Image 1 (tube, rainbow over the protein chains, first blue to last red):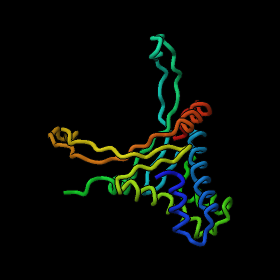
Image 2 (image 1 turned 135 degrees about the vertical axis):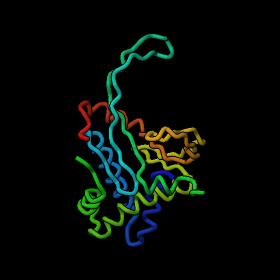
Image 3 (image 1 turned 180 degrees about the horizontal axis):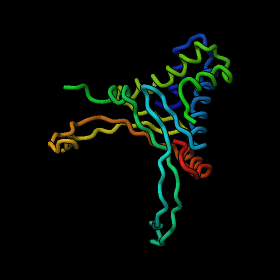
Image 4 (image 1 turned 120 degrees about the vertical axis):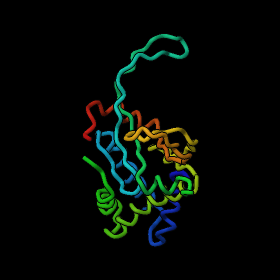
Length: 95
Length: 101
């Protein structure tokens, strides 16, 4: 499922809404989520999961082409942890 | 600073012009469509944000950390999230401090 499939599904669910409203809603949700992480914040969606940043310390890397050493500075990367409901729904049914 | 469904619904009310009820439902539906897709075993690709994928993990040996007893960790299917290049580079560029927790 892509972003446009998701927009189509939401528009279908709400026949009173215009497709452009569903499109804008998806844009607002995703931009707000991205913006929160960019500012170093967390996202907590009950039943879905949480997004936060993980710290990666600086390290010495190598240019795979030239073999040259390069310093990779410390950085933060987005991290997702699935919530209980999502975890249970995607897993195989219990035996 | 923690973003929740309530703040997202407020933004849909302000920026999209949905009424409060519709805004709350829309946020719920947004996450439910993604969950339902993953539940069907299909991945979700949200351009500019990231991809949610499924990973099948085989059974592996585990241990009860309290008792030391060996118990197998059963085979399972889990969700993984891969942020888009765009999101990763925006976070790298703009955020250098400690996460606000």
